[in-house]
Image 1 (spheres, rainbow, N blue to C red):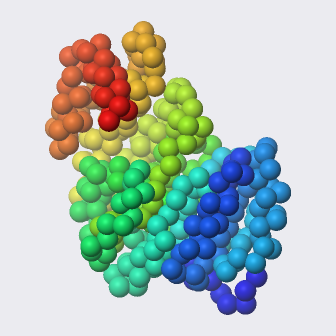
Image 2: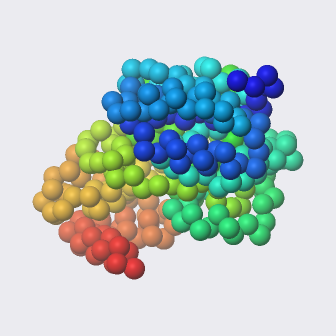
Image 3: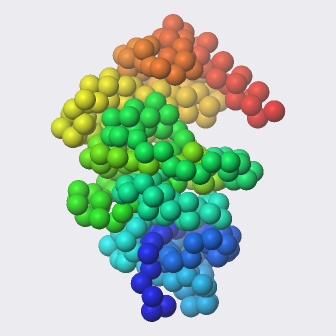
Length: 329
């Protein structure tokens, strides 16, 4: 453990991640900004993750490593535990199976310094080659309402893992990740934070490579627990009306409906028969919610919502065709 106080704390929840730890440590070693600590929270792993983390914490890496072991409680519990032991003035969250650009920390930290904000967001990508496309790395500063609209309409580019936050934000607003949820718990916390912050900086480049892990929570199966995302969005409606009143009506019109659209899309992609698709989607108020999206600014969302309301069968087969086409490209 170094004597110098770390500027940034990176919180990394790990569940059965023994095969990803070496790659992530190499990734962290290559960071151009090195004044940070890596806090690994082993969330009740049943493989060799615990032993591996206990070995690497004293292996002489150029950054501090803290290892916390806990019974399995889910990613929110793990991230909250990491927050409770973080010593840095600034916080980042990384998933153990993903990859960050070598200038991830440097760009985020410098953007906070130059913008004078407490939050900076970068973009995520599924193409690691895009890390080389950095013609402009000056962060743009959005006011609250402008960024809330950016997040509502183009939020797919953002992730809590492609961001840096002042630790003071979490204390000032008493924010924690909602425990007991498997879906959209990170998005819920981001909305809570964005509703309260007056200015948010955004880097115009990807800094985080999202690895499509086939055994992740999002990719295993699709069950009715996806309703958790809708429940969390419904809980946010009074929050938005209170802290962002100029944006609250827009959020109430589109946010819950947008999550229905996402669940519908995932169901079409993951369920191999229209019968299963229909049985699953009948558990949701799909038509009622998707009608709200007819006025949504993104055409692919507004028109696919209209298509489903006209014919779920045609919608299902077109999404399946699109999925096969994209896979073969």
